[in-house]
Each structure stands twice: as structure tokens, then as C-alpha cells.
Length: 487
View 1 (tube, one colour):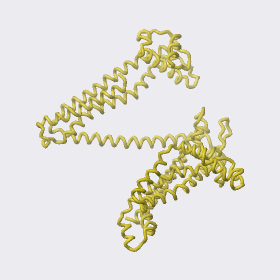
View 2 (tube, rainbow, N blue to C red):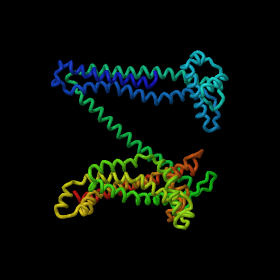
View 3 (cartoon, rainbow, N blue to C red):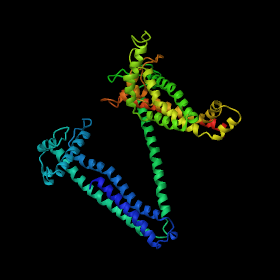
């Protein structure tokens, strides 16, 4: 049975369990809810969970383990050249394609089940090619035999999976229905499941973060085993070459990242903060209802659109002013891609991050603080400057640091607007690049992942991780320091 149908059947059984559990709890007390330990809905949820969770857990475990078992049982049937790297992966890919093709041919009626078992190797490639299934090599007798073995045991596994999942679902439903009575603590059981679900969700989030960090650490250590750390952190030249003799100094990339982020924050922070002050302190409700959604629309625009805007609009405008033959009559800008181009567009993208968060933070300042300031004779502008903004400063700093982290991690705007040149310069009208752009370029194409030129991407990612962590620690320090003054 297809997995989707199996999931639908289990969900139907869970719905039936909810209704049955609820009705049984009510019938056990003749409809008097006061005699039940828990509300009737808890009895229904208990039965639904017993019908749903064991079956879904078994389904997930089976889906994970079945391909592994099939691969291990099929691999001994293949005659492979051990000296050829990747031979096993290519051979198993062809086995799976042949097996899927035979299965598709049987399902569509192009071939009978007996014909799929007795087809000759030379007929398989033509048969699958007619169905649009491409193979990496000719179908050998060993490949065909392995594919037939794979397909046969896959069918057996699917039937066993169906039987196991349905048995667990029906069995769980029966056990829950039998245990349902007036004394059963259904609420405790449901809340216990909910607590474990929350714990599992938290563990998944934590383990995902740990896995990402460990992958960065291990690959970074591997990179520094091939390339000197001193040259990486203090080198001023970025010139990767997969032929050898590469120079992988991170300083030009860090400078470009921080320079473009600084320009973006110079644009975004004043505009975003002033917008937030206006919306929270001066704008009428009607104006606020119009302006705030309009600002937040900027956050929903894909970054590739911002990158095209930088490349096709902002860059040519800057060239018409600072480029050759421009309005100023001097050539300060050699091309449309520059730090200023990417920084301006990135700043526009960051405005809603600063504005929306700062607006919410300013609105969270107690109204009593404003009333006290105004009652002492301060003007509205003095109240904003000397009372509201200092009280909201920790949150505003957090919003700015969030925008800074967003700027440091941006890729598409930099690729299209800032160029790909890694250099150290103070001129904002020159092309530069960032760490994120080089991570993409180093992992694009047919790269040998055992070479320093590919592993350097993990070292770059680890560097960005440390910088972002430092920003978060700094934000926590600011928040704690200023909170003590207002508590």
C-alpha cells in the first residue's frame, strides 16, 4: 500500500478513536460528566493518540531502515571494481532505476509481473528508455538480477510495513478503548504525551544546532590540517586555485562583509528607527494602519529581486553620477557593482527589520512613563528623547544587531550588486565581495571536497558563526546592563 494511503488510513482510525473514546467515557457514567476524572475530550484524544503515535513511529522507522537493509542485501550480488571510486554508488543507482522502471512498467500494464521477472538484460534498457528512465551504464545480468531482487524484497517490505502499521494502529485503538472508564486518568495521559512531544521538539532543535556546529568544526579542523591557520586568518590575498598554489586569506572577505554591512546599517538604522518613532508616537491610527504594512512588505520581497534591483537600477544610477561621463565629471566608479550599490539596496531590505521591531519595543514602554514626563512639563519630543528611547534602548539594540546579523549573512544582493573582487579598500565605489558569496562559489561546480579550496567554505562558515555569536553575546550584555537601570 502506498505510504500516503497508509497515513490517511491511520488518520481516519485516529479520528474514529477520538469519537469512540469520547462516547465510551460518557456511556460509562450514563452521560454524567461530573463523575469522570477528566473531560470527555481527553478520553477521545487519548484513544486518538494511541491509534496514531505507535503507527506513525513504526512507519517512520520502517521508511528509514528499509532502504538500508535493501542496499545491504543487494550489494553482494554486484561485481564491482574496488579500485574505481564511487563504483558502488553508481551501480546501486542503476539498480534502483531498473527496479523502479520495472515496477512502473508493471503498474502501467506495459509488462506483467512474470514478464518483469523473466525479461532479458538487453531488453531492459530499451524498455526503460521508452519510459524516459535514463541509466548510467548498460544493464548487465548482475544489475538486472540485483534490480529484480531489490524490487521483490521492496514489495515484501511494503506489505510487511502495511501490516505492521495497521496492526499497531488498530491494536492501540483497541487498548485505549478498553482502558477508557470513569476512573481512567485520561488528562494525565494526554498531557504526558504533550510534554514528551515538546521535549522532543526542543531536542530536535538543539541537536540540529549541535550537528551544524560539529560539522563546521570537524571540516574546519580538516581544512587547517591542509592549510596554515596563520595564512588563513592574516592573509590579505584571496586567490583560490584548484590546480594548487592557492592563497586563502580571509581578511579581504571579512573587510568586504563588514564594509557592506556597515553601509547597509547606515541606511537602515536611521530610517527604520525614525519610522518607528513616528509610527508609535506621532502617527494617527489611520496613518499607522497604512504605513506599517507598507513598510513590512519590504521584508517579504525575495532577496534575488533586491539583487536584480541593485544590478539593473541602483548600479546604473550610481554610474551616471560617479562613473565615466557622469554628472560629476570624474571617474570614481569603474562599474555598476560596488560596495555602495549592495549597501544601499541591503539597507532598504533591512528597514522593516529595524522599523517593525523597534516599533513593537517602543509601544511596550509603559504609558505611565510618558504621562509622568508630560506631567512634569516635558514636551512630546523631549519625552521621546529622554524617556521613551532610553527605556526601549535594550530592545532597539537587539533589533539593530538582528539587522546586522541579517546583513552579514546576505548572499544574493552581494553577488549581483557588489561583484566578486576580494580586495582591501576604503573606496565604497569599488567592487568587493563577502564571506557568504565566496562560500557559495567555493562549493559550486565539480569541486574535490578533500582539497583546501573546497574545505575552506567550512572555515568561512565557522568564522561567520563566531561573528554572529559574538553579536548575540554583545546584545545580551547590553540588555542586561540597561535593564538593571529600569527595574
